[in-house]
View 1 (cartoon, rainbow, N blue to C red):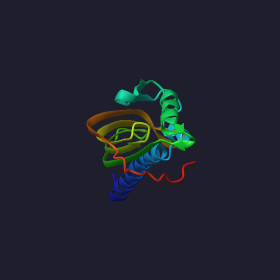
View 2 (view 1 turned 30 degrees about the horizontal axis):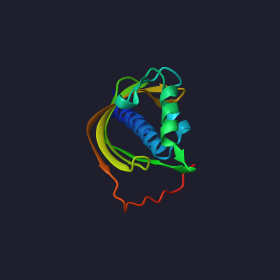
View 3 (view 1 turned 60 degrees about the vertical axis):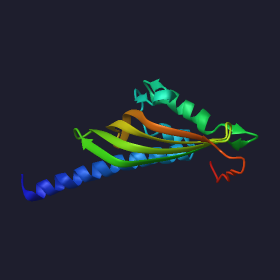
View 4 (view 1 turned 180 degrees about the vertical axis):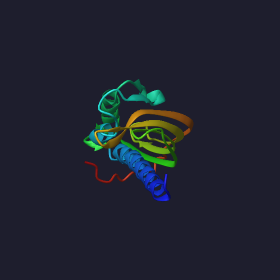
Length: 166
């Protein structure tokens, strides 16, 4: 292999890794935006294996997307009552073939729950599998293992000012 062939291969690998990272960022933005359709679009068309611990295990993304939509978009008096913030850091993407890859991410999660007036902080580890499907990288499997969680009550003086959601 010539040095220009090696350089082209390395650039192609970097492009594939960047596309996978962008997929995960789209997923996180969908979670925070309460967008169940965009959430679902981050997974393969059928058969995605999802294990999110207390949120359940699924053999397809449809039931998880439906649960996500019900929880994230829950309203009281026409106002949202659950507010999440997902940050995934320290990505480690491994290309396993031209059309498959694995990934590991550290999740930093924060939630304000106005139903029970609590704030939750949590960290965990995502282990994902990715598949190139119809020219786009999608998750074919995702497992979240919680590392620790802190839940505390919101004080009586806590005021949440929500922004706009679709």
